Length: 393
Image (cartoon, rainbow, N blue to C red):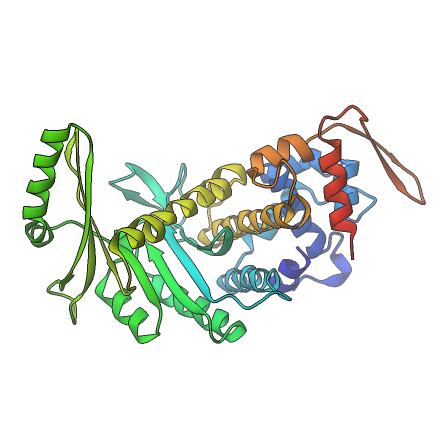
């Protein structure tokens, strides 16, 4: 939160400032981690002694109007500055370790429903409501970027510009690292493929079905249907071939995963620059992108990344980034403090319920703050393990 506050910058008149930017960012991010979704919740939370202690103050914290002014004053420059913080946190989390040989960047888009007259809000036929379509980039569990986009844009509209920023920064930290971009068919665009190849970045992207692809796999599909009729169990077959759409500048390797079951044929296609066994690439490489969808759910549902209730577009982008900062804080809590405990793989909602939202008596005087926790708490051993790990130098 200190790094985020420094990146945002504070242009307020110092003589009129009562709440520092660092304390307001910490208050907002900690509130999200603790399950307080909205700014108005802080009218009560600002008087909580434990929250005041966590933020580092001994008086009432910022009110809802003060935090609201912070959000509504957001700018595009601040958004990119906070994205740099996310990337720096990712690089710093691997400092002192062996340089990674490969980094897989999972690209995915999701939707944020709108229920007001927000700026740049458009109706989307697929989701059947007004919404934004934020673009997320993950590397494993780490969130590297979350760019808010209007829903009238193509899913791949900003992906190459965003990936170029990320790839350049990651290669500056680890010059020899191999980069692989993974995503669904919404990002399989000729421009995306050409630029990734020009930058030396490998890819494994979903490819939408069309007549030509189905024709190339027709004989194998018929054979698979006959096997299903003979055996009565779902049948699968993997293969690959060279394919070039009319808009592509050259042929590329396409992996076909053919399946026939009770619902009939279910073919899937993937275009990739990687070599190796087709079945392994599809099952272990491409299908592993489903984990990024779980991470998006955690950032959006557990940490309230869908709360785009501000009128201004850039204020909603800041809200999305605050949820991303809260997500980064929680995964590092898992990584640094909960390793080898029963909560090592728990989601944010579980950690919040079992470790953070527990009862305590708070006693504060001029010299110290004491938190008196229940000795009968069933997870006190996990709490103490985490506290010792975070206090270690």
